[in-house]
Amino acid sequence: ALVLVSCDEEEEVYSPKPRGYYSLDMPKKEYKTFESTSPSVFDIPTYATIGADKHNNAEPCWLNLDFPRFKATIHFSYRRVVYNISTYLEDSRNFAVRHQIKASGMNESVIIRDSSKVYGLLYDIEGNTASSLQFYITDSTTHFLRGALYFNASPNTDSLKLVIDFIREDVIQLIKTARWKKQD
Image (tube, rainbow, N blue to C red; front, side):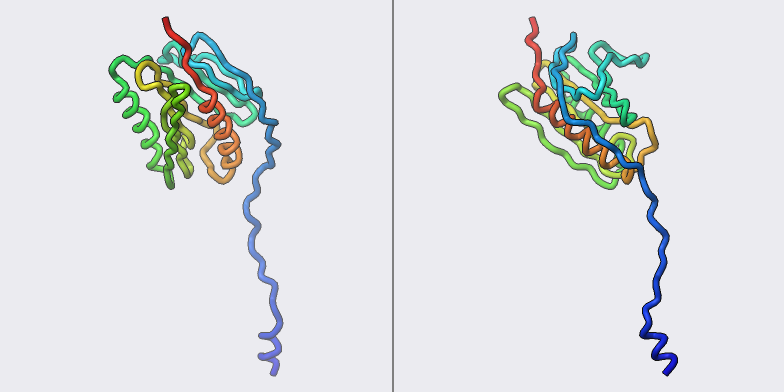
């Protein structure tokens, strides 16, 4: 009888608490038009800063969109297309595919905006990768702009997911508003 009574009682089972992460207060989504000497025009978030890429190998019209609050940067590289678009398309694909070693998946979203002659691909790279979001846009004949999101932190999908999704909305806005300046 004692064995049967002891089996009826439910014992509390203890398990360790999962690791916690900091709570983030996201800024309000507001955008401003960015126009510089670069042949492209697009909207950027007001809580980000944009400037020339200071890297030694940087070319003119290469830019960095910094998100200081999140320790994140979108690196932009612009190339003029001169019968070499296939090279730029292949390079963009290769840069995204390089992250598949650590990735758990990669989704591609096609970009088609005929009214502004903006076409391209958005790569969502899942998992603990150095760059979880990359894209390119082009008009297929003259302009090619590539962007890649990087964090100044160790990649950890669990802690960065909210920020990646937040910045992804900014990239979508950038793509929706991108247009090419008229060239002489």
